[in-house]
Every structure is written in structure tokens, then in C-alpha cells.
Image 1: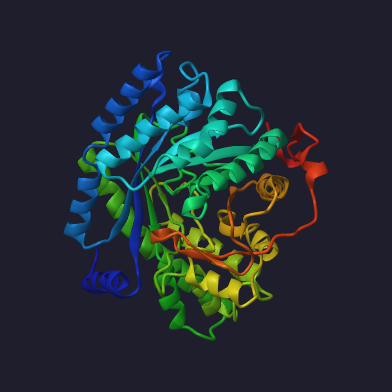
Image 2: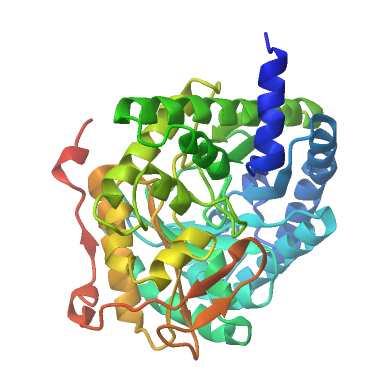
Length: 454
């Protein structure tokens, strides 16, 4: 039973502490749309997506109004397009035509983003995979709401270094083709290791081949709620600290479970998972960095940061798992630079650099996220950064990712404005020593010894 004090407490979380449901994401399988005729393929994609998701935005708004719960985004994820377009696409421009179709769907349905302009190449690349990857810069330059992801490694297969090298070049090309908008295309492109099939968050969302024909996944977020709870127990022991985070994560996740069940019922689409990640926004008080400060750090990046983040991530998962029927996606703490005012402040104070952020990704749920670097950063250096993150994910059997933005025309210390949820970011320095000979070796880094569990 829910008593009145719990209702009041939840209302306070929403009104004063930035609690929200970050996204309702409908996953849609496009495998049955495959066709050797590109025009027919695009028509099938358009027809299926508009049929299944025609009420997604309306339903989200109705649930938000009825329950008083902010639902920030309504999104769609689709089967990796490299799998869907293989029979019809013979050039990168053919894939761009699919991207334009997806963008048209997004605009007509009113969804914020569509994820799944993707390829899964952790062990090798098919011709279709490579064509899609080479189409990414143009696709992101000529669309508004399409997000792209490429999975280049996994614990089971190792790291596809040919794909890693190519993605360094693709990130650079994407930055160049969107340079008039501060290389914004790169903010919609992420390179992953161990990508989950059911992630509702962009830019890494896609609808995995193991999923049902359609599914509802919900991402919740509440760093402001966690921060407020920790303010009430300043100076308490680690046991009290951990218990407080767990209890708070449970309450946050219950809100997501309610929304997911309602959306599933009203749309007639099965409930998939709750992703209970703490995802920040540029709004004041909605910051993972401020949670870390409340735990006891002057700034993120100070000694103890990795331990504090590990503690936070683990307690969020422990509390959230008990609150939902199915937990999936990434589930933990996001540490994007541009989307978190506290992280921006730490970078500008000199407390936080890319190397420390990389160490933090060993214990959180994602990776180097929304990091602006100088526009003259080489493709090989970007590939090296991707390889480092993929190695962390591969060895630790976790998801890692790189969403890095080499902002054309910008140098260290300058700011770049992305707007909306993407916020703004200081341009951060990168290590200037070369890794080109390493990246150019080609081939695949083998899977770690502990991956052999069959």
C-alpha cells in the first residue's frame, strides 16, 4: 500500500529535486522490413514505425499529466540499420536515404530522437556494415533527430581494431561536415563496447535482434533527489551513506516502473526494462558531479573520485533492482561533461581531465561522454581513445562508450554551445603523443582469458 507520506515525498522529489522520467523509448524491430528494393524498404520502415508509434508521444503526455510526473523525452530505437539495409544498399548514399526516412518518421511522430542507425562490428565488418559506417557523417549532417552508434568490441569477441581505426576517421569527418554547428553531429554518434540490446538512452540506443517485435523501455533519472537525500546525512558513516542512496534509488525506480507499466498497457506493447541510470542535465541541482561533492569531494577529479563513483553506482543498482520487474540498459551513473554543470565546473577548475574521466569509467555505466576536444585532434588519437575505453569494457565485462567531439576551429579553454539537454562544454586537452603506429596495425585484439566460459 502507498500511504500519504510517500505521495507527498514523491511530489517533493518532482517539484523541488528534479525527479523525472528521462525517456520512454519504444523499440521496434525492422527485420521484417528488409527488401532488395530501396524504395520499398524505406516505405516499409515508414509504414511500420508510424503504425506502432503513432500514439507514443500522446501517451507519454497523458501519463505525465495524469500522474504529475515529468516525462522529458519520447524516443524510438530500431534494429541496427546495417542489418536491415544490407540487401538494398550498395553505396553509403543508399544508407543516407534510410536515415532521411527515419528522420521524417521522427518529425511526423514528434519524437525527440531515433536511435539505431547502427552497426555491430565487434568481431568483423560485413560490406553492409562498412557502407553504413561510411555513410554516418553525411547522414548526421543532413538529419536532425537521428542518432548513430557502432559497437566495436565485446568481452566475448575482443576488439575489432580495423573498426576502431575507421571510427576515428568517421568522427573527424562527422565533425567537419557539421562544423557550422560546432561539430554537433559528433554529439549524436557513440562508439561502444559490450553495447546492450535494450538501452533506452541516446545516442547508443538500438533494438537488439534478441528483442520482441516491439517493446517499451523506460529510463529514469534523479541525481537531484540523491543529492538532496545526502544533504540530510552529512558527516554520516559509509554504511548510512550507502543505505540512503539505496533507499533513494528504490523510490526513483518505482516511479519509472509505474510509467513503464502504464505506457505498456496503453500502447499495447510489452514492457521491456527500466534503465535506472542517474542521468544529469544542465539544470542547476540535477548533477551527478554534485552528488559526488556531497559524498565528500571538493570537485570530481579529486583523490577519492573513482571510489566515490564506484560506491554511488553500486548502491543505485542495488536499490533499483528491487524496485523493478526487469532492470536493463546501462543502469548506473552517467558522467557526461557537457550535460552536467558540476562536471563543467570541475574541468574549468582544473580538477578533472580526460585521464581521470577514463579512470572513472572503470566503475560507472558508460564512458567518455560528451567531451569536446580541439578540432585539430588527429583521427589516430581519437581511435586510441576509443581503443582505451573499449579495453576497459572488454576486460571488466561492462559497457563502455566514447562520445567525443573534435570541435572544428576550437582550441583548449574555449567553450562550445550545443543547446538543450546537450548543454555546453569547455574544450579539453588531449595527450599529444602519437599512437598512430599502434592504431595502424590492423586486425583484432583477442578476447581476454576470462571470457572463455562455455
